[in-house]
Length: 121
Image 1 (tube, rainbow, N blue to C red):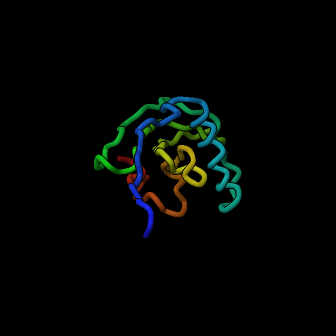
Image 2 (cartoon, one colour; image 1 turned 90 degrees about the vertical axis):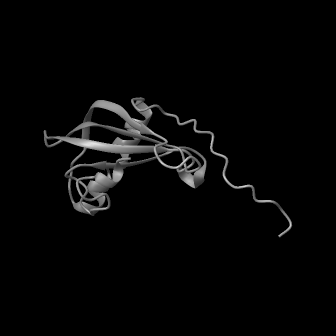
């Protein structure tokens, strides 16, 4: 090897903040898998009580993450808790922040089971 690999240098600057409309818009757009994979027309209508629950709660040199929670109103009129993570360099090709989310009761493939517990810090 003729070059030095220094490893990741995370800045810990996570934008957007928890309640910025852009992150909410990303979540709203991401739920389209309901329509594509589960033959459902559910959509997020409204976000309420969005708040940060933890920041960098894991080991010091891991990817910086902001854990957030809130309530979403779905197009069927029901309200569900939502847990999501905004993480540094996890977006498209690692060029920006990324969002991972779980709506309690709508995690149909159980990727964050039980009850979205794995989406929390």
